[in-house]
Length: 480
Ligand code: ADP
Ligand code: MG
Image (cartoon, rainbow, N blue to C red; front, side):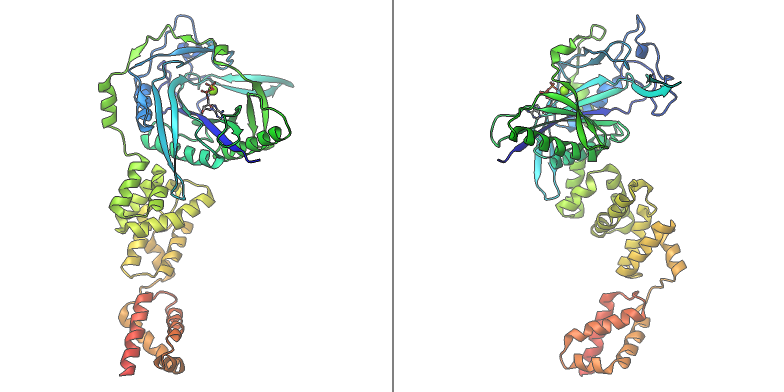
């Protein structure tokens, strides 16, 4: 029997503000433990939270970018839980009046298929601190670092619109691209500024939704894919052997590649939500929304459309180059120096991305900077180097961290000019009279042999079009 997977994601995104969501404690990743925790963070009696204006602004930006309705009236609520890393004993979150609802994201897959993922809601909330479990003096102990407590988060909840781990992966990539383009978060899964919980169920196609299992602790793109695939398989085998799925929350163990039960179903009522009395219900004015709309940066989709229109790139190339802000920036800078969008696109897509992925570095760390790559392409277009030499120059540039001009000087990649080339063509014609005769007799294929000899003679530096042209001219003149 075939099953269909149904997946919905809950994503937490840490906002890049200078201070926390409800107080003026600064936040910096990696600061010494418990140095960024003032009275509000510590939950001292009598301290009152005040909403950070910047958080609201960034939140609205995200809401607009994800095509959500921005609520006119919104409020905060207390979510109760035993939080050893949140001293108040409750988290300030939003329950029944989230600030943004009913959005969607269009996800372009490499096969040019588009999937539309609906956004159920987005709300603002505070992060908890960090617990560190360790041993001390032979005993198992836990430490708490409250620096992160009170850092602003957006929780983005999708509708269960995804049908495979691959869809989830592309959705997250797209979402990360949008968030980074907005400049509101580092959105880095490995560093925890983008966190994702995956809700997974399976069903017979077209049937009612199955019972879902929520997977937590997914801290890389790979983990998201592996965990979802594992859970789909597990649920199918439970159902096939006559069992039932129990609604539960599980933890992904990336080392053992399996999920572990954390708790069975918890419901909203377990959290004893109630309106936060210290923060009044407030209104988001249409003027504020409008002013934020007017200062939104260009989003990946808009970039993509611009690349297609302005640069005449194929749809797929435009998608790949626009999805990540840093890659888009690299590409556009390269075009500035090369003056050739199509060739720049090919080089970035086929050469640069492959190398940085293999080396697992960011494009901003790549030694062949846009200026260097743009220069290589320009030299190529000017006929100063051939395609083959361009590849070699490119390799030397990033391996030795040199400018293209320096590489050309160092390795003696001298441009072959036409007068020079003409002599070489004459020489090769003299050296291989038999082959020349064959061509004169109509065996056109033999031309390739002569081209090869000329390339060899010039160490691959002759422009092939020029070589072909010279050979044709010489054959014509011999025919007369
Ligand atoms: P809760 O608020 O209790 O966590 P929600 O109904 O808000 O539950 O759903 C949370 C997430 O689970 C959402 O991303 C939603 O898309 C997803 N989800 C809901 N039902 C299913 C299901 N049957 N299968 C997979 N995902 C689901
Ligand atoms: Mg939930």
